Amino acid sequence: MIVNGMTDHRSPQKPRIGSAEPAVPGRGAEALEVRRFWEGLGLPGLIDVHTHFMPERVLRKVWAYFDALGPLTGGVEWPITYRAEERERADLLRDFGVRAFTAMLYPHKPGMARWLNDWAVGFAGRTPGCLHTATLFPEPGVETYVREAVDAGARVFKAHVQVGAYDPADELLDAAWGLLAEAAVPVVVHCGSGPAPGRHTGPGPIGRVLARHPGLRLIVAHLGMPEYEDFLGLAERYPQVRLDTTMAFTDFSEDLMPFPRGALPRLAALGDRVLLGSDFPNIPYPYVHQLHALERLGLGEEWLRAVCHDNAAKLFALP
Ligand SMILES: [Zn+2]
Image (cartoon, rainbow, N blue to C red; front, top):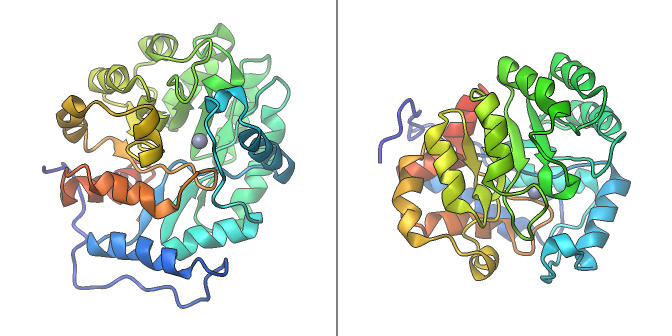
């Protein structure tokens, strides 16, 4: 499949192989495997639009939630593979050759988003490769802090409809969506009903946001699982809607929420709007498995190059 505007990276110039010691002892072999994947495609590295970095005490709570099999995990055992200090986690992504990544963070209640956004400014500042990330919640003042974040250089937003348990079409958010559409800042939204449904998950509520703001650069997290086909439909309808691959096609997700094989041609056709996402570090398998899960779809190297690097490079105007 040919992807319009795609850069051809198969030039003789080989990317630099990291010479530093692996950040986490024993992880070197995996870093080599990850690098073999993107080098084999002739890419300069990976861009991962869905990685989680958040204030330490919030992340510890998230991990405790997964450990306790909280209801939003769907009651499925979910061992966190990369439970390490923040610095080690960021170093590991660099060992993998992830050139750019996000700091997906999200509030579960009012009064928290601004604090998270303040933290995210510092994190992006001290972490090479991080795309400055911000978040939002339906609450008074949201438009103000979203504007402040955009003015401060936020490159991407995260909204979590399931954990936040809010209606994304809530009128309190309307001006903020409008502002983000106008500023052409992408928003990664967890709006699918996986691994467990929320009151406002599914294609309906976010579809109402798109009806009002058709230019919003929405990135549907997890390919919208398990409502894959509904969200493919939204992407087909709205040219600025994209999908991230986070956890999709892995053995873990295929067991619980298999992607309908019959929809693969639609996924192939949207090859210029599918973006690599992983959910690192909160994944119950090694990072490289996400990459192999994409490879085994059999959609070809052009598709993989676009998804694992080029589409995001274009979206975020990365060299
Ligand atoms: Zn996530």
